[in-house]
Length: 345
Ligand SMILES: NC(=O)c1ccc[n+]([C@@H]2O[C@H](COP(=O)([O-])OP(=O)(O)OC[C@H]3O[C@@H](n4cnc5c(N)ncnc54)[C@H](O)[C@@H]3O)[C@@H](O)[C@H]2O)c1
Image (cartoon, rainbow, N blue to C red; front, side, top):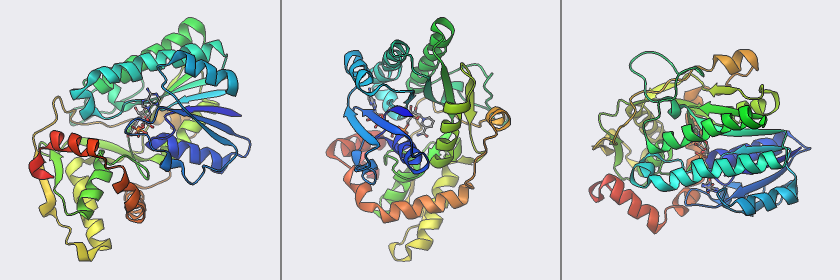
């Protein structure tokens, strides 16, 4: 089985490539990634020498390059992780989000159709559904109501993917997953950022009142769901993926502080590090995903309890501090200072 994986040098893509290689002896993988600031080949250093795996640097917006890669590789399956993914960056720089997340996806769909792939899987997000009040959950039938340039670009990609199914009968699936955590995540996101700042004795920025709620899932559980949908999902269908772990941002931050304080008693890690900063524009209040459909129809279920998964993740970052520090470039520092204000860095 030949997998064309885009964005495989990022957080979830690199975990999925490792997941496939560990479980599937007959797979051959081409990782097609443009190595933006979020893409890092070190995320794949443990499998670099595996002869089932190869890498091509390229942008999904470049039709010719994608087409040539398909010509040479002849993929059975396409799994598209490639995207600009950070909501904050989409607020300050929306155009790249439309280019990569919408136009790039249309390119991939067109090339996939031309090469008659067995399945195209679009990795989407629960953020396309918008924001919830105190109650309720997102179902696959919930109307799309994206509210940030990031989620709007992902919703646009979902609609294009469905259009390629209805118009051209391209066999597709779309998965919409909640917030992921686990190893190899770029440190601009809440969990690795909190860990890194705790270890460096830096203030931890928390937006607004900290009570925005996200629904968390370990990246390995996301990977098992993706693989199941790729092989067993009914063509044309959307599947929500989540593990029923709603937590407020402030609760996540306090939990990390508590666990790290226990693991690193010499570092004086305490809640004094928390710094509430001006809220994100249009900040969605609450996400909660209903994944009954994949659980019932495809017999999937998450296997990693949140508190245990978080402890394992924190341990992993403690063991890989050099890797975490090495992605902090001058550009990232400039972005960080602009985003949160120099006073808290
Ligand atoms: N992280 C989450 O919690 C989460 C939750 C649900 C869905 N998703 C979706 O999962 C996918 C992967 O997310 P992630 O957190 O791993 O992202 P990430 O930012 O860690 O990685 C994105 C990868 O895509 C590559 N890329 C970006 N633009 C590209 C382009 N134009 N051409 C080729 N490569 C390009 C980057 O170099 C990087 O390797 C995204 O589509 C995202 O919308 C993420």
